[in-house]
Image (cartoon, rainbow, N blue to C red; front, side):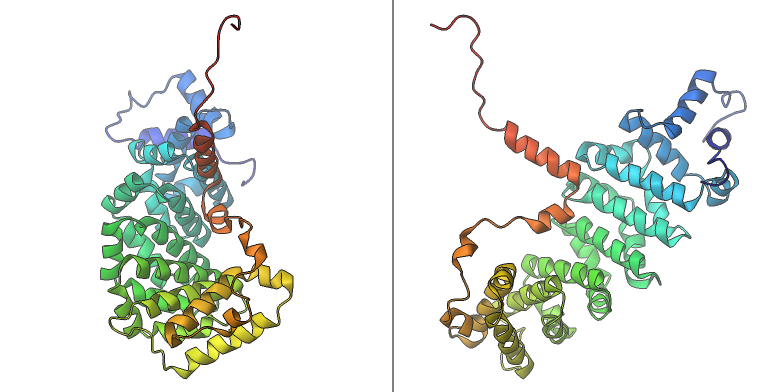
Length: 364
């Protein structure tokens, strides 16, 4: 915070003087309401809706006004962090639109500060994740356009990565969103992400590509024509295990779609890749074999689909190990699902079990 922190009372006065249809007489706020506004920004004991309303009001204020009142970019990031905590609840995420906070949040995607742009996309990811209602509201508010612009054109790689994450959550199980992504030539942006030198950007791109290929067989031809198989073959030997696995998944999806031969099984680079991954897996320690469970199975499946014969991994008994029978933790879900939403889902599962009725009165 600048000096002694933001001047919340000054922000309140500016907000009142610029309210739609507000006159000088109606701008006179009672001492009680004035105190509520200031306390709402200084304390964390106000209910979530009240906090979200105040945050939404501040997001509507021009940057120069915020700067004049001592609000720094760090203050705004902290405010967005808090907003993200609130919208982890699906009900509160949907309420963001009704209290007038969604459009200001979308406007922050165009903020002059790259950190604010990235954080806004992060909050938006939480708002729309597994939330059809908020996905629809964002699409109707033209939220896809600034996200897509940031994804393909922003000079800051963090902004691009966060925008891609938000797009991925926005268009999942959202036919309107997937259509908009294809029409905007989204695959060209994904190709650029794959050839970047940023692992997180590559992971998010590969994850979305795999999802889109699963959802539509026709996308396999688009991916083939844009030269994705060659890039994926290269990434399937990446040092990052998630990049390797995501690339192998997409290659397998292409190989299984045989109608147009989207993956050239005669490609010497593909065969060399699978042979090299097989050799590396064979010499792994027991601990590394356990960690490479999915990679083992992906390499085996790709070899079988492409060459119609058993892989060397299968011949050596390395595709399925006794330890594989143990239930592995759902790492992906824990990583991408908001904590409160995950907690709510677990709580629902726990309470959905049939309860033993309480017996009142003496036992028979």
